[in-house]
Length: 75
Image (tube, rainbow, N blue to C red; front, side, top):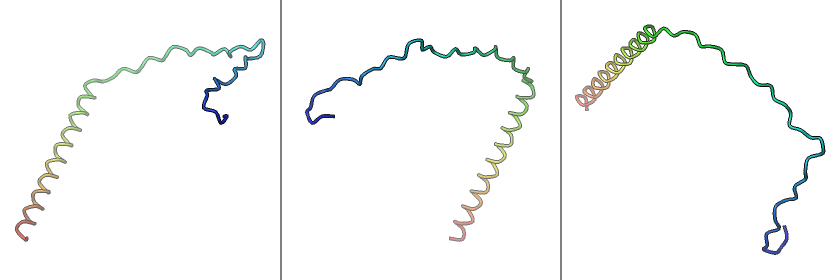
């Protein structure tokens, strides 16, 4: 850049050489079909996961209140 505060313009654009072309790109094939889904098994797995989550939450809250009550009684 120069010391003056004027815009020098964009950089010089060099054109591509003669005969230059974009490489041709192979088109992909159609996607494969997805396997069939067993919705009943998916629902059963989600229900088991929800049950495990609820039990873990129940045990955690019970343990938290137990520790809190013991702490209050000893403190």
